[in-house]
Image (cartoon, rainbow, N blue to C red; front, side):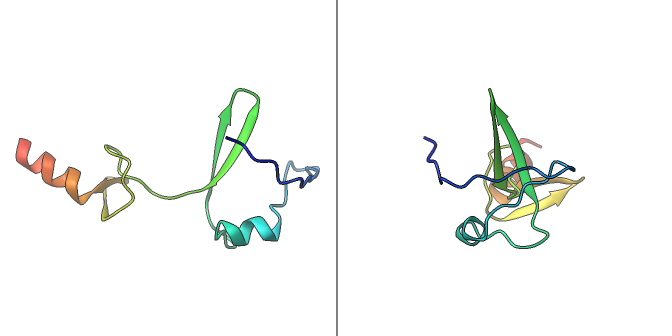
Length: 82
């Protein structure tokens, strides 16, 4: 469910839009934090990027393997298959 903030910003000539400080604080977005961009029909959605396991989507106990993130549980399940 979407909730309107009542905040309106204009894109500059490079297409940039400033995210208001109140929202950056609420979502703990700091300078240089990666932001993920999603589209849904006629909407653009922004989300602070959080690495997730490529198999289950978990954000806990991640390790990097060939530039992909995998969680400990999925790694153990793969090990069992071998």
